[in-house]
Image 1 (tube, rainbow, N blue to C red):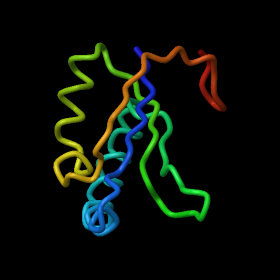
Image 2 (cartoon, rainbow, N blue to C red; image 1 turned 45 degrees about the vertical axis):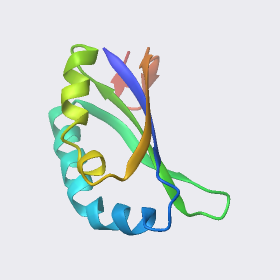
Image 3 (cartoon, rainbow, N blue to C red; image 1 turned 180 degrees about the vertical axis):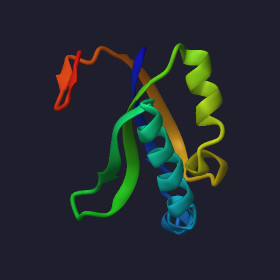
Length: 100
């Protein structure tokens, strides 16, 4: 099952510092998921000024429970970067290199 994740960073003065501290580990975990086929696409949400303020991901997991368990271990969760996480079931219509 596919899911769209929209995760917004905190807005406090230390939010960017927490993001940057966890960023390398988060990217490593994301790349592992790409190689395993569970992460399909992801990237940073930007403000109008181009500042990182959150993330979006399209992922594939057997069910919501498995996704929730995976989310608990993401460095942006354990590092208190993402403050608001929205998970939406998602029907993939297609993407370059992958038929729906």
